[in-house]
Image (cartoon, rainbow, N blue to C red; front, side, top):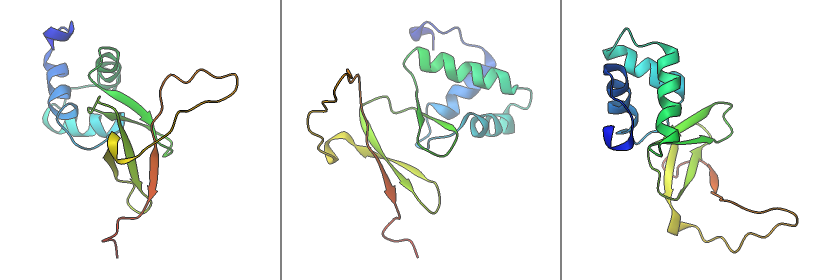
Length: 125
């Protein structure tokens, strides 16, 4: 964390150990619940503030993928997402798997884009 200009604390390290290593896309509440299991004194505010700090320093992305809550993503490379309609599971899709042409909209400067694909996994019952 120090290499990113973030002063490490026991709470920040506990949060980083989970959220920067997961392949899931947890909400802040899920991060708090998970970290609290091993670090019971961590507060909700500390988790929320730390997630925002990690986001500001480029360690996490924050996405609103339609579930009503923002999710945090440690994969900061360009990629898209698949959201399972039944389970709500979010999986990464490689950037190269979806071809999008030049995005041109009148009176809009596009800064970035990502595609969210929704459906069911083929092996779902």
